[in-house]
Length: 396
Image (spheres, rainbow, N blue to C red):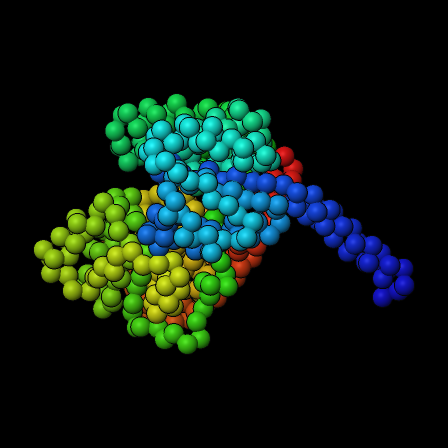
């Protein structure tokens, strides 16, 4: 390399670093408020086994910001989780226990001092976004409306009560109209909201869910249990678990279901009535225990009818697990067939063929698991997605 080439290289490196440093310095004076989903709290996250997962990105963002507020629907018991948060993260909660609905409308008034001094508001989901919309109107701050899944569309697909669908059909367009930016977790959701609400495509940004790749990683000490198949998630209709149970009940394999939900009794009744002895239910376990359960397994399965950007799929891939998923929205955006995972149809027959193929092919499992880990490290790590959020905030 000549001297001139070396100088040009140094200049390019400095040019790439200096703007980033300038942005970081500017952001260190900024304050972000996260509005939790209506009715949600740190305590509810903890009981659902997902507290460490949910706060990971805010601990990372707090390293680059002056302060982060978490507006929670919990009571003073929320303070017990303060030690898990960065020093510059503060919890705002329902001190007088006035209830979810009342608090969702009064929170901007109750916490007006903190909200008035903030720079950015962000919703965790569309449910409860009206609280942030009220706060934006009151205090004229920049608002990011985030939703992990299309609320109205999901209610319609699940054939929920008409009153719920009506409420969502009123709230979604208002939130999108008022928001300065809209963050969604998948390409399908972005395309849907742009078309549904006639949004300027520049206002809608994809920032997928994240994984702590230092926690969810392959284990050198945990041994695989032969033919152990694992599912982690909510036990609900759209997860298509009846077909999954039918797919594995005649296989020489064990299916472990981790999670709870409205379909739990239906699934347990099916297993008991058909005397299926290779399916077990483990309930909810803390997020920090999931890497162990994943690393004990040979395959992770997610066979939903539809998805947003499933966190458990990303966590399984981060652990280097070969994954099998249905060829539906939200899953096919992550899995590249027979590269970093395996796609199948939503039928029991297709699932059975996929599971059999993967279990019988050691080389395929090893290759897909290795590529799965690489995909997550490169595109879904906490640091990389926190950097995207910071860039989004800096551009507002």
